Length: 69
Image 1 (tube, one colour):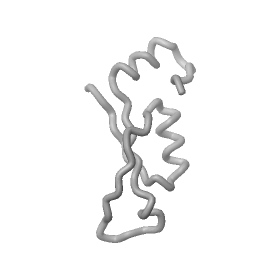
Image 2 (tube, one colour):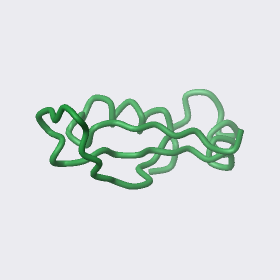
Image 3 (cartoon, rainbow, N blue to C red):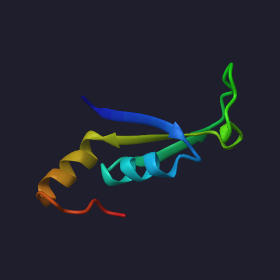
Image 4 (cartoon, one colour):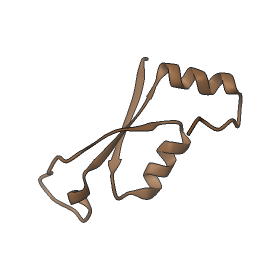
């Protein structure tokens, strides 16, 4: 596997924090209207990614190590 990708609404701070703690970084923000708009849709979605090299770098740092900010 070369890359892990996850999406969340831009306004969903809790999900964004989980993705940050897991080592994923914000790759882009996009706006794709859905069939049933919900509150916060106007701010778009955040796409997060963790590439293999980034994961390997975290793995070498050892358990409990913080990923680079």
